[in-house]
Image 1: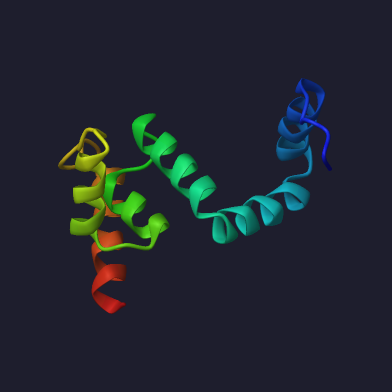
Image 2 (image 1 turned 45 degrees about the vertical axis):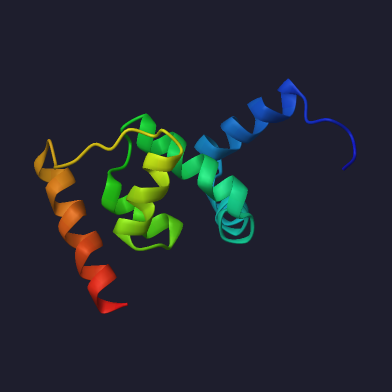
Amino acid sequence: MAEKITLWLHRQLERLAQTRPELIEPILQRALQEDAEFRWAVVVGAYLDEQINLGKAAELLGMPRVQRQQLFLEKGIPLRLGASTQEEAQAEVEAWSAEEQA
């Protein structure tokens, strides 16, 4: 598909994500797994929008927390340390547990 992706395609992807997520989710998962630049952009965007925390960002980027924190600092991405909700605290615990098991 050499043609530039146009606004109509973006809108259709958004609509399909809502009405037929089973079509879109595997494609997005594949893109996240196969394209490191796309994965970085999505994860950092979600982190900056406060949709995920540091632990989840580290997990999704597949790198140890300390390495990810250092990379964020090098790129000028602010670190939000500590959970502000119970859900964030639970996600932090799960991310730490997953990291220890790896």
